[in-house]
Image 1 (cartoon, one colour):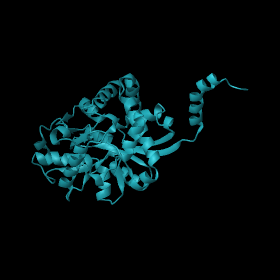
Image 2 (cartoon, rainbow, N blue to C red):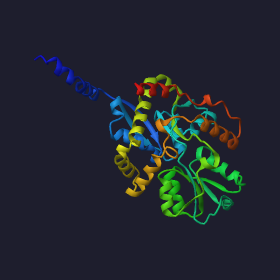
Image 3 (cartoon, rainbow, N blue to C red):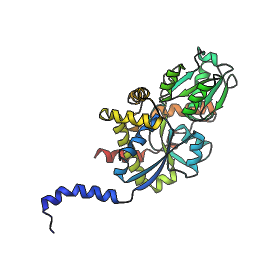
Image 4 (tube, rainbow, N blue to C red):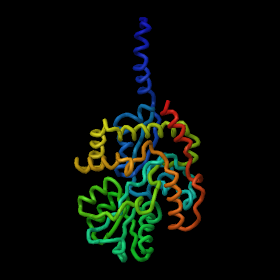
Length: 325
């Protein structure tokens, strides 16, 4: 049977979509934290944004940054989403050749304390809980406390893992006096009666927190795949922040993080605020990254290396160029 030319043209997009759906998708293993910043990953999977680019994203959630760093180094997954300070630690401390390929946000953090704590000075002799003691938000906490006259030894640092574990620890043990928390745990902490002493960015200046990082060797060998992934991630981020999809994004937060409707709504409002939430299109903040490196050098010792040692944004730039077409 001969299909008329006009009909063939009309069917072409449908046939192309069917062919793509039937083709085997490229699997890519992604690891992230069980917090609100994973929204684009959940949305991208649920709404077929990754699949439309021929990607099968296999998402796992990490209990701690230490486990995530070990997993990436061991090749258990290809892409890690977390505070990029972890990538710097992998390069400098563990001598692992990883590279940062996107930005993400400035942390969305608040320094929370028990209701009986009136100021940073009241943390002398108390326990400050962290994810891991030598990276990312633990270093922010140490710097903030140093700025207020408290050095290590004036307080105890106790690692307990990712955000949900820190929130639960503070709820269950009043001896755990403080922790840096991000969304949705900041919203839940407020509902529990915990008190914020401020946002680290307001206290310390610009900070490049979340981003994606990969093993450099893998990136070089799989450049096209990585660029497709970054492009799809940015599309999923745009989808998540689009007011037209607000209800869907709030529902995803509620489902994936086991949040009440009210907490999910408040969390989404903060995620969607460009000043305090996601950085549009996961752009990389060069000033914030330089500040992060300087803070890390101050708190961990050693000199701050050239920023370009740790990132390669060429994959991101090519992905964004394709999105613009």
